[in-house]
Image (cartoon, rainbow over the protein chains, first blue to last red):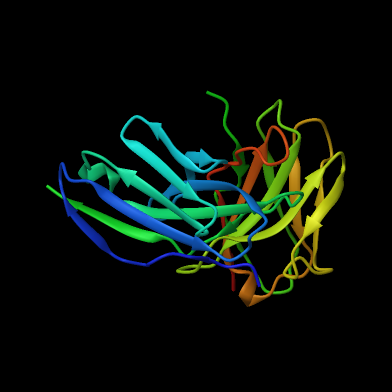
Length: 111
Length: 113
C-alpha cells in the first residue's frame, strides 16, 4: 500500500513567520513530488514540484526532498493570512501516472 | 494563462441516473486524469488517459465508470448508474508529459440523492 503521510494540523503561525510543512512517503520508487494548495471548496493548485534531492526555491516557497529518508517538506517564508489553506503533498512513482495524495496539512496564518 | 475547465460546476442527480462530467484540458497537454475527493477526505486517483486509451485506473474505477475523448478538446467522465457514495468533488487534470506537473480544473461537485 503506497502511502503519503502528513500531519493534519492545524499548524498555526503568526503573520511574517516561517511555516514548515512535512510529508513522508512509503514507496521508495517514487520519483516526482508535488505540493498543492487547496482552499476550502476549491481545487488543488500546484505550488511546487521537486524531482531531485536538495532544495528548490520559488519566491517565498522552498521545497526540500530527501529520498533516503523518504521525506519532503515545504517552507513558506513571510507567511501571509492569504496562505491559510490546506497544503497537499502528492507523490508519483516512475512509470506510473497517478498522483498519490496525503490528507493535507491545514495552515492557519494569524494577522 | 491556459487552464483546465470543467462543466458543470455542480450536478445534482437521482440515484441510478447516468451523469456525464465534462473537462477541457490545457490544449498542448497529452495526459488526462480524473480524481475525486469525498468531503473531508483525501484526493483519490480514478483514471489516467493517454493516446485515446486508459493507461491506468484505480480499484474505484469499476464498470460503472467510463472515460472518453469525443473530440480534440473535450474529455468526459461518465458514471452509468450513480450511487449515493458517488457524491464527491470530481477533478479533471492534465499534464504535458508523463511525470510532469498535473494541473487541476475547478471541479464538479456531484450530489447523488
